[in-house]
Length: 64
Image 1: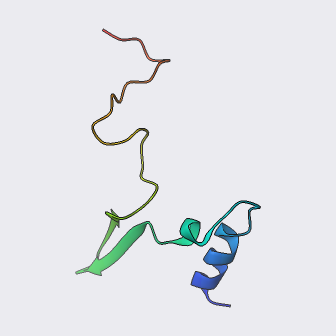
Image 2: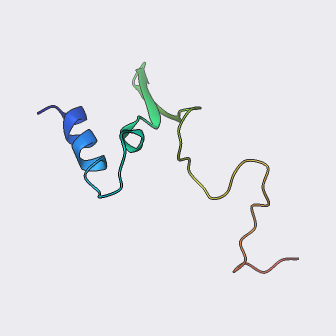
């Protein structure tokens, strides 16, 4: 079994998981000894919290 197949199996093994859960979320490129990791534009889940344009403050953080 390939690494990609293992990844898919792991991400779809939860009771309510779907094929959407196994879609790639990052692109990795290697060039001139440098590895670059980019979050894909079509990734359903992105780092951080909230959606772009939303108030990014958290309720547990004091506000000025």
